[in-house]
Image (cartoon, rainbow over all chains, first blue to last red; front, side, top):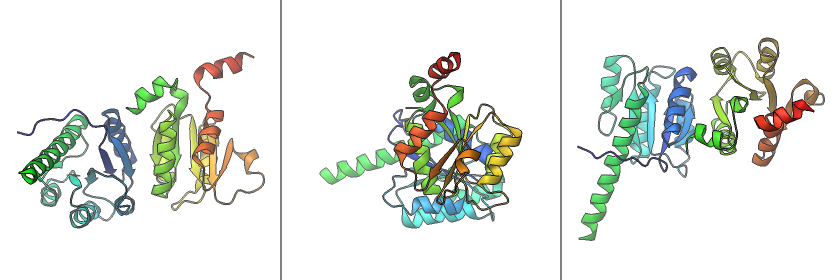
Length: 144
Length: 140
């Protein structure tokens, strides 16, 4: 089991959701937990942010059904191809869409909307802890 | 540090909640960051429809900072007029690349694009003074 990491202040989360009444509370909650949060109101805004390669993004939390219904997948696919070090968490109400979305994520996480805020934060924390562990392992094996 | 904790530390209160309406994400992101670092609580909206959603459901918005030119059924002026009619206590700061004569009389503040962070914070602080200073001003 991945050890939970408590220090979040150096991590940036891109929250992508076209429903402001969903996006604002989860973004506020994550800020309260110590993350830097960037908010995008759709896939076009998310890709504008992600294309700024010098802008540090650690995790993308995106809704599946953005605008045309494929927006969340498009964001996840773009991230996988262009910024593979960024973790993706996909959220959606329809189960089938969420299951498909899971295939695009590094560890297959998908969350249901409306969000259970604490669960979202725990998922992000675990992903970041896992990434740090992998980086440490890579570093130590390189030292040998 | 969490926004709420930071805001509290800097003496912000209910009069520090700002609704920022801007359709260009990189501009909105920069302005929101500047305002949060100054201790304000910021709600970000990408267009007037999102802003109306917030205004109809969220209490304690003290100031709307809105771009004029935005896609959708309502632009920034339309949004400002809606706020004037339905929530007259909320202050309005307009952001525009083309500031026109008379705008400063119609709104509480007018900011020219590109907005310098120092200018943004100074103007917002003038509109939303800390509660302590506000009560002192009112007692004069």
